[in-house]
Length: 98
Image 1 (spheres, rainbow, N blue to C red):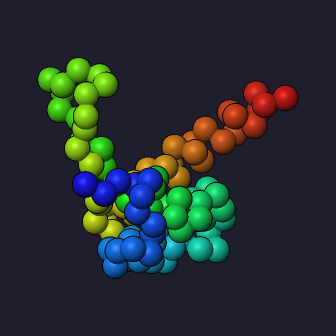
Image 2 (cartoon, rainbow, N blue to C red):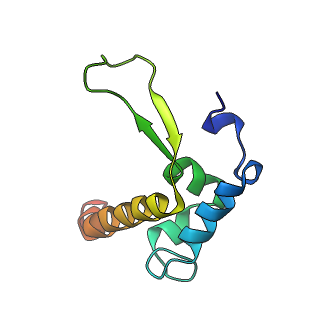
């Protein structure tokens, strides 16, 4: 099975769809100044938002897990959740940073 580490963003057409979906989104896409727009390269978008790592509840920690690619819609939803999390705590982080 291919994993994130050995599969570049350009190796699969679905990656281009995921990157395009995130980059064209009105909240997290290019030019929005979103934490997603400002901090992730295309390859990092795939690594961060392009996969889901499923681990059954009954499997103890440390056992192998199943990975699957997200659809472009799922990847955008994950990017939106990341954006909401970072922006919700940005003021608190900035206030305690010094």
